[in-house]
Amino acid sequence: MRVVATFAEVRTQVRGDVGLVPTMGFLHEGHLSLAQAARSTNDTVVMSLFVNPLQFSEDDDLDSYPADLARDAELAEAAGVDILFAPAPDEVYPSGPVTSVRVGGLENAMEGASRPGHFAGVALVVVKLFAGTQPDRAYFGRKDAQQLAIVRRMAADLSFPIEVVGCPIVREISGLALSSRNSYLSQDERRAAEVLSRGLMAAADAAEAGERSARSLTDVVWTAVGAEAAIDLEYAVLASADDVEPLDQLDRPAFLALAARVGPARLIDNVHFDGADGRFVADRGIRLEQPSVLYRNVLAADDQRRGA
Ligand code: AMP
Image (cartoon, rainbow, N blue to C red):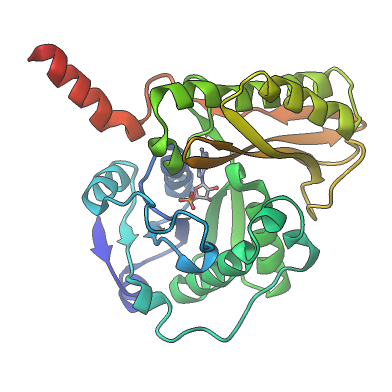
């Protein structure tokens, strides 16, 4: 695996079909599952590591976002990445960009409403990564369901000849969706946060049993999460998977998404529903069978303490 810092180096080192996996680094098994999916269908797998300042607002955690290039390089290589593209901000934004990319009403609800400007930053950096690395396929997680819908629509509207591939959410043993931000949580906060996926799984059960009302499905989430005082649920919304319009009824492919504050972290999660003939099946994601690599250092320190 090569670690490179410029778009030009990426372009000169790829061969054959190229799969791109955009990330902000501090890798976990969710990111690695995207790399593995890319590995199975491409000749060259490029993973980008770039904490994009444009998608963070002043209140966000840009300055404290976890970063460890040596750690990420080891994990990326083991997952089959050929080229790790870790640019400095100047490579991506050589001058303050005056060009903007907006993806219409898809930006309005949920994360767009909670984080003004977030998706303008996401759309611009994804356009730059697509243009600069010229992949055949690009891999995104369903974890960021609104982002996935926005990227799909943006790629179609701008005629990028790139297949956008959506991959299932990877979850910790407890069900908590993996996020680099889970590394901010204490053990107690992590335990409290498990209620988020429990609420979504209960809503998935209700939908598969025939519940169609968005209000009833989101109530399942509010009730489950309400039982945990340490969690501040910001929203629970059922939206169309295609255009991210909030729905009253589950009557088309959709996702039920939430955002919540837990201690120092703001977490998002969702469950995706696919349906035909009025029957809906939930994608509950994939659960790890062992602790995530996010906690490798914590577990190693525990072992050392026990051994000492
Ligand atoms: P991030 O580094 O958080 O910007 O995420 C980079 C990519 O990894 C995005 O496409 C995310 O949707 C995806 N991703 C993040 N967490 C997960 C997860 N738990 N399961 C699957 N994909 C994920």
